[in-house]
Length: 113
Image (cartoon, rainbow, N blue to C red):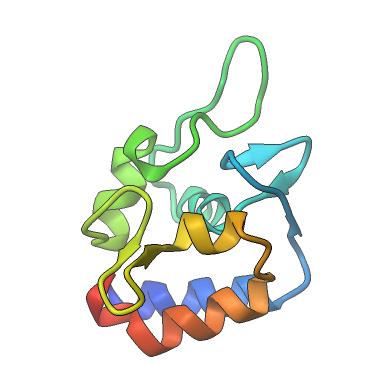
């Protein structure tokens, strides 16, 4: 993964700006860790997909639905599979880990993402 983007992502996850959800990129204004990455990409004018016309929420449950974000961040897998922990960041998020813990994992393993 791109180190500069990983650093920005960790800052965003620790910022307290984002409420956390599970199982989807965005749900009623809350985000999974991958949804936070999509919001960062959107701020960088990356083409992020939404559930339009029914909703302005992010499309999908992984970055497989957000290929522009996946490519921008230089991630190897849509669920941010972490070879080091043998789990994806999506799984870590959905298991109940908070954003601060996920940021710690990203910092320790960004090269494998």
